Image (tube, rainbow, N blue to C red; front, side, top):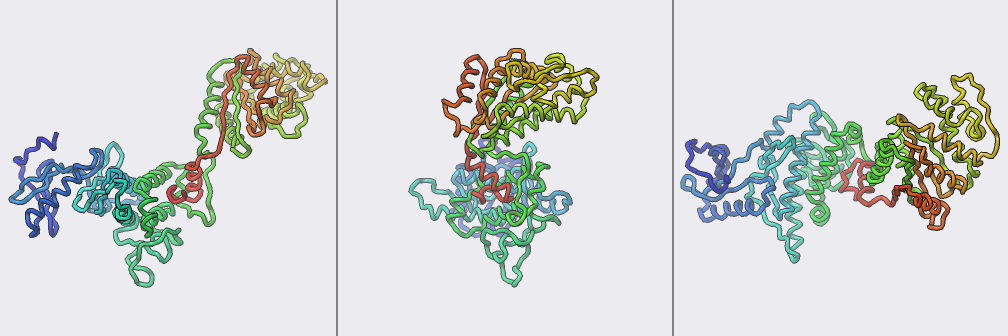
Length: 543
């Protein structure tokens, strides 16, 4: 609307706001006018201003650039009329930031991200800016997010996007923007006189090399010395990112690196700075001595974690008969690690867990007995009065003369804790029918609305038939609630004829819903994220 209906006859007169050797810029309320003041013929001036007009009109409306309205006479000269953009130039913003004493890295990283975002929009739209400088970028804040607007389009050019275009020439255009971006970032983080030194790699602050020569555009390498920003070290992550923009190989720079990649790297870096659990990592030197990862990170496994946690939430909130889930995958895929992380979170929510692991040569029916015995040993050691109600439920459910005590001696210790009653074990076959029936009643007594129970059994491909039959009984017992059975098995060792699969089909045939979670290989991009975090390098540089 502003572009179509502006009125140059305004009661507030024009005000000169910028003057250079060849141009002047005037402001008239919400409009600006740029004129060329040198001795260039008017025809040539019209051509130059027309180029800026065509660039501005060519870019998409969402691209942050000077929005040119038209070319129209101003004080007897051709004038480029444009909508006035509000904000500070990057140069003025850095002057304000110079006195910031606390955490200067975060705002400068956010501003750099905004610049990379706008440049990527230019390149994606088929335009190179070719004029990146502190004076030609306006900064503003839009809904709490920094945005960068490119204002002087006089040196911008079109990128030939056709399939038969001269790729070498196109790469040169893009490379120039990337190297200007690297110089701009160096100015933002290290000061306007900073250069890239080839001698030691990375970024070195100052006007000259140690031998007195001017610095050259450096090769991508890790820094051996740190760089300071207002007294703080520039993390290697940022040093490597900036250095990569000065790579001299045209093909590497223009084809493999794009402003969109740089924007993604900076966004990743800003997220780390905003995360108090990862802030320590961004200041570490990579590769040499202390490459490491924060605990609790599961690269490429977010979907699997979400499915496991959803299963646990269902056990907690849905008061149904027993629920069942199976996690499958090859050895080393990380099945057990995923489950144990989720179990840790489940316990923090007052959930109870009983865990058992089968081995290839496990004694028949010993794994379940050992798992329950370990569970009651921990309860006995805790001496927590919270479990007094559970103790009473168990006594009421299985009685004081139980066949379970021989297989689960710590159950006897748990029930005797704080009790004067005479409790006598009944000896007999561990996995007798009587034992199986009592174990179902025991699980029903353990689980409750306040403390739901998960039974986790690992490596079920080696489970014996007696144990599988007991699991069948558990899943079909309608009296058991707030209980979930979670199993893991190696799918490369289990085919359709395996006893485990036979038992699962029988259980499903009786109406029990089975949640299946397959853990396959980690995708390439997730592996790259892992390597990037371990080495404290931008993801683009570790591909």
